[in-house]
Amino acid sequence: MTYACEDCGFLFYRVGAVKDCPSCEKNNVRPATAEEAGRLEKLLEQGKAALRIKGGQT
Figure 1 (cartoon, rainbow, N blue to C red):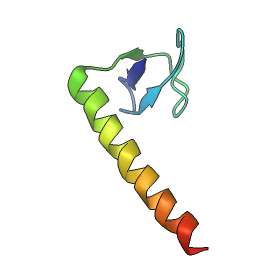
Figure 2: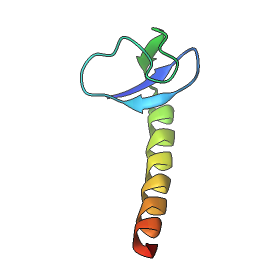
Figure 3: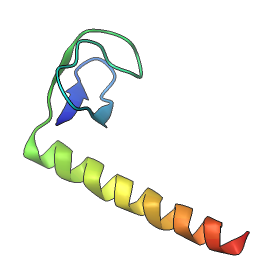
Figure 4: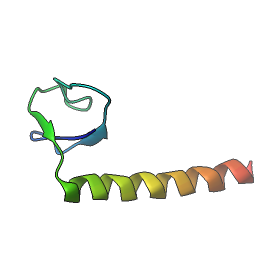
């Protein structure tokens, strides 16, 4: 499931229930909206592409 922190805005995936934000460690976490989940997915895809490029160059 995708979550968003109301305090710092961090978006992240977790399996199961979440109590605290892994970034700021505050407990103001909620399920992410569809828009937020889509934004996180795009960011992760961009990162995966960059990792593949770096891995192929070394």
